[in-house]
Every structure is written in C-alpha cells, then in structure tokens.
Image 1 (cartoon, helix red, strand yellow):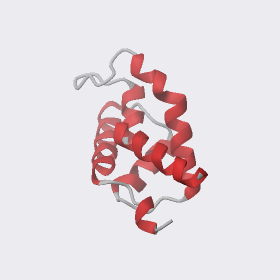
Image 2 (spheres, helix red, strand yellow):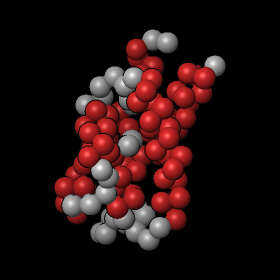
Image 3 (cartoon, rainbow, N blue to C red):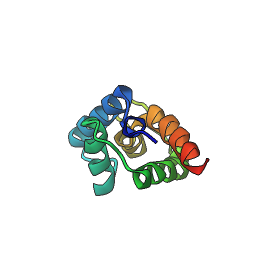
Image 4 (cartoon, rainbow, N blue to C red):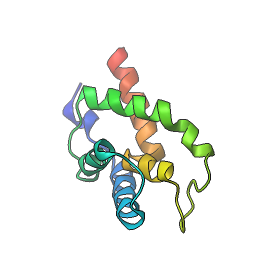
Length: 105
C-alpha cells in the first residue's frame, strides 16, 4: 500500500484542528492519546497501519457518544464531541474504516 494512502485528508486535518481549539477553550474532551492523534492528523503526518487500527477501534467504541447531550453544540460541546473531532471526526471514521478494510484484504 502506498504511503499516500495513509496520509490524513484535509477534512480530517480541519476536524482535528477544530477539536484542538475546542479542547483548549473548554478544557475537556479527549485524552493525552487523543490530543497526540489530533496533532498528527492536523499536521497531515503519515499514519501507520497500527494507527489506522487504533483509530478504527476508537470510533467503534465511541459511536455511542453521538447520542449524548451537547453533541455538536457550538456553545457547549460535549467532551465526546470534542474527542471525536480530535480523532478526525466523521471523515476520520470513514477513512479509518476504509483503510482498515484494505489492510484486512
């Protein structure tokens, strides 16, 4: 698989940057690992196969967060929403799912 296939998209980078701003502003959402991942995505640094698997697992575990109070609320976003953005948002989930599938094939 070519390295370019493991480069985060511009939209993923934008989501991660937004998540970092919200994380700083509201002082919530995401762990140290999530913040580190956000910096990686925001800088569009190449991710490894292990990173793809980690991202896929994160999204699988945290999809339920979308049902929580404050999801997507611009004035008072939930911690889960901020964390989701740190991992690349919906585009990150779609991307990680597709890359994981390619790795399995």
